[in-house]
Structures are given as C-alpha cells and as structure tokens.
Length: 227
Image 1 (spheres, rainbow, N blue to C red):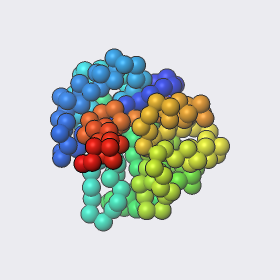
Image 2 (cartoon, helix red, strand yellow):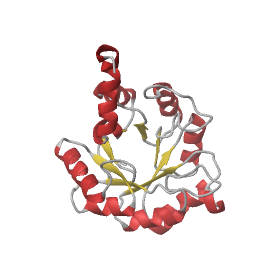
Image 3 (cartoon, rainbow, N blue to C red):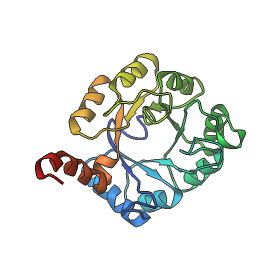
Image 4 (cartoon, rainbow, N blue to C red):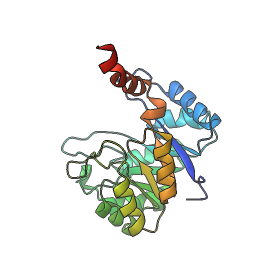
C-alpha cells in the first residue's frame, strides 16, 4: 500500500449519467484540482474516466467500474470482466464490492481477488459494509479494506455521517491497511479517521458533487428563508 500512495486524502471523482458534471473530461479536471490541492490519490469510475484522469494527473488511481446485472445487488466492479477493463485503463488498484451478497455470473469474491492478483498483477481494495466482511476480505487476500459500503447494504448499520464505530472495529481486527470512506463531509471527520488509524480517507460528494454541496447549504437555511 505504501508503495502506491502515502497516507492522506483520496478524492473520489465520479459523476453518473444523470448528474450535471458527467463526462470524462470534467472528471479529469476534477482530478487535476484534487492533485493541485494535495490529494494523494484518486478513485474513479469507468475505463473512460480512468483513461482521461491518467492522461491529466500523476496521482495513483483506484479504479472501479459500476455495472448493474439482473438478479444481483453487487455493482461496484462486480465481475472479472469489469476489473480487466479498468486494469487496461491504467488503474493502480482495483476496488470492488466485498460484501457477502451473491455476485453476478456465479463468481465468488475469492476467485475475483485471486484472478486480479494473478492475471492483472494489481492490488485489491475491498469495499465492505460490516466488520465480518472486512475480516473475510482480508482472509481472502484483499490488500486493503474500506468502509465504503457501510450503511448501503440492507443489513449494515445506518448512520447520518461516517460510521466511526465500524472503523474502530475494523482497525482492531484486521492487519491490512484500512481506508475510511462513506459520508465524510467535513475536514474534522477526515482528521478523526486518520487519528484513529485509518491509512487514508476517501471523500467524494463533499468535494466533487456541487449539487450535493449546494443542497446541504439550502437545507440548512430553509428554516430561515422559508422556502
């Protein structure tokens, strides 16, 4: 992990098709702004965005590929096919859904991690929603585990902000580096996670989604302005 990026802030540069900033060129500019401001890495979605970002910045890229399959709730790099595509786009690390939910095409998490290591020669970031999933991901060979999906699976604890309790539990039970992610909106939250022992913290919407940032301001002032 330390060979890929140092401890610090990783910025997630993503915009889906229904979002105003959707587009690989725009995401590349977002990544450039993150690099200029001191981020140590970028998390990006789709081969097209990853290629554009790779051509623009020198930061390491954690690649994901969000793709939905019928009959499966897993959509963050769900199969080896997606992992292979983002590897070809020059990702430095592959992040994937490491929850206990069934994967598409009958693939297992064990098989996927092993194939990424053996055939793509890349490290794996396991996006988890519970302590048990993080422990299992480490056992199956994940190079780092993250709290990315905490609160986003039907069975995981829902919190308004970051799940610091889960972060503490994972830090106490795994040996691989732990990356904090999920509802980090403020610098103090990022600092707290790093002080707890997280290797790095991923922040997305609070930096790269203006519509979410604007909404946060509007909701705060609505009781005052009456609209």
